[in-house]
Amino acid sequence: MDGTGGNWIGAFLEPHARNLTNPKDTAHLDPKTLRTVISNGIRESSMPAWGSVFDPAQIDAVASYVTRVFLVSTKNKQPTVDKHRSKDD
Ligand code: HEM
Image 1 (spheres, rainbow, N blue to C red):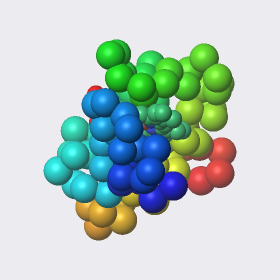
Image 2: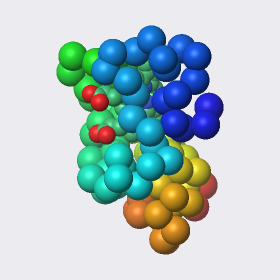
Image 3: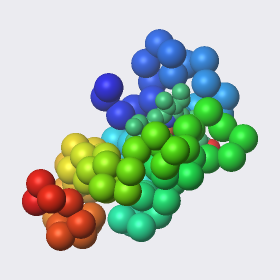
């Protein structure tokens, strides 16, 4: 998963998944918004509601992963997910 939403399967999604490596696409994703969107999914798109699959600690872990791998590296700034919310930090 490279976070761009541009892989073979991604080409068939309508709307397309966001490019998480593009700061313009992710500027609105503060920690709370990121957790909410992962947990609730996005209406009228194929983005699943992971809150019915993962517990809150797992949602936090996924949000931390997305932040560190995509958001922090592309925005070149410090992690924005609350550190004490993840037991791995
Ligand atoms: C754990 C796995 C996943 C994570 C962490 C994740 C995370 C995200 C995030 C952060 C966004 C951007 C939301 C925003 O800009 O407000 C997004 C958008 C989106 N995701 Fe996912 N996603 C995952 C899996 C999937 C899967 C499996 C699909 C489809 C099969 C999918 C389809 C989409 C689509 C279509 C959008 C854009 C929706 C729109 O623009 O209206 N995602 N996802």
